[in-house]
Length: 188
Image (cartoon, rainbow, N blue to C red; front, side, top):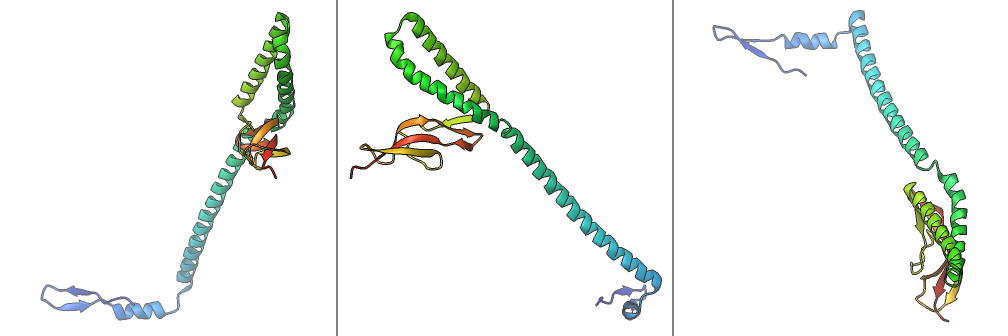
């Protein structure tokens, strides 16, 4: 209910506003003009709420599309990098065998091995520039989230990586390939 308002006249008399007539007007049925104005006002409020909802939905959609596009860009090279990992593995094996030959060989063999080492190093640095991180080193604690145990050997501290057969690879924080490792276990 509305409170009655008072006015004061110059002679000190107070007059009440027409609060009673206002109550009667509120209770009286609305004319067609007033009814359509109220309906239009309700429709306007409803349209405003719907517009705000649609704006929020569109904003969420836009943010989701931007995030998805960024993910596509970050992982666009994934297939190529998976293929290059085979070449990295071949370089790793070649370098393992080259160390044996390098000490015994002629100067031309040593130069050839040095060339393989430089090429392998450059390939590794290139992959790192594109977001690749190699995982799996001897002495690491075995982590099933980034290692694949190929075999176990007795001795040493249990759960430690004692040999790496293939290095694992993360691309921008996502595991592409787990490292294939040999893990130590307790005697028993």
